[in-house]
Amino acid sequence: MSQTQDRLGVAVVGLGGAVATTAIAGIESIKSGSNDLSGLPLADRAVGGLKPYDGLVFGGWDLCEDDLGTAALGHGVLSEKHLSGGAAALKDMHAWPAVGSEDFCKNVTGGNKIAVAGHRGAVERIHDDLSMFKEEQGLDRVVMLNLASTERTPDLSAEAFSSREAFERALDRDDPEISPAMLYAYAAITADTPYGNFTPSVAADVPVLAALAAERGVPVAGKDGKTGQTFLKTVIAPALRARALHVDGWFSTNILGNRDGLALDDPNSLKSKVGTKLSVLDQILGYPVEDHQVHIHYYRPRGDDKEAWDNIDISGFLGERMQIKVDFLCKDSVLAAPLAIEIARTLDLAKTRGQGGVQEQLSVFFKMPQTKDGALPEHAFLKQVQTLDDWLGEA
Image 1 (tube, one colour):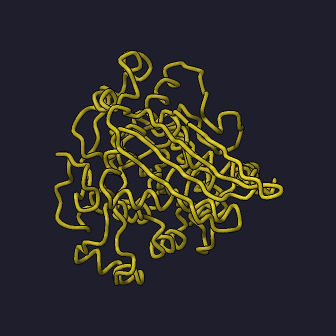
Image 2 (cartoon, rainbow, N blue to C red; image 1 turned 90 degrees about the vertical axis):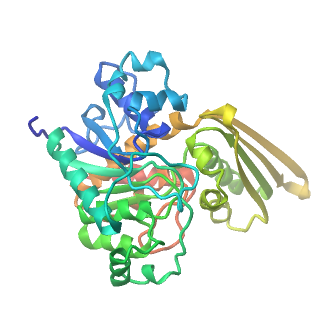
């Protein structure tokens, strides 16, 4: 296949997951003639250098050996109708063998694992997969997205993360504190491939990897896609602050039954996820919310149909107490997939513009956005939207 200027490879960690298969189904439907761009945040933006949706080509890694059509049906987001129509290509797609670790992600495993020796072997294999993908598909460029299940948080005080040299030595000795997410991020950066982390897992936000990305001029962004409950939280909280309505407490709970929910049924993975969901309120409001609680429960019957429920206790004029209740019944992957697609397109745009390192202008897509200098991120949604709009409008 000859190389064109309109084909962008999206190499996905977690290709067989609900978010990835939903994203691929949407793009394949567009390629097959659908003009339905609903739910895609940047569909109405004419920006030079931003790859068209029908120019995206997906590949990637997953521990599951099933074809993507079978995997998608198992997640319960797509139906046979989708897979016999525009998304039929999923039936012929298989993931490449993946790096896996039950130590980092206890409840998600599979037989489709990379058979290599140690961390360096895994990185070399990932490099080979990226090169193969680009060559076989005739791609102009490639970006990498982490859409895998949530890992436990490693011990970031470990010596392995104290410096670039220490990290390289840790790779050489197969240090157990280096996670699969970090191996993929390191492989992407050292292959000069833009990297986006849609998960709460620690990856390119490790300072040594963020610095490496800046040094090599590789765009990186993350972490944890802002899809449902936190999206609404970052819309509501700025409005409450603007109206001088004090938040006395904010109780959030979620139930979901997809593979992400199963991963979060492990307390160590859950801790990583809750940490990113808790991070937004104090910075937006300008004061600590002492009774801010976030709970996530795996409830198998719901599948991908997540319910996010919030009870907000506020006080206003004369100290009078009031409540706000929000019940968001949503399809988790249907909200997430368009964001993953736009992250891939905008990371590629940053690369074509020669802008490496942490891409703060993409904060609107994430619960815990990376910042270049380690400062607190901007969480207020409309401010994030304006920052992205300003960047897209640059010549």
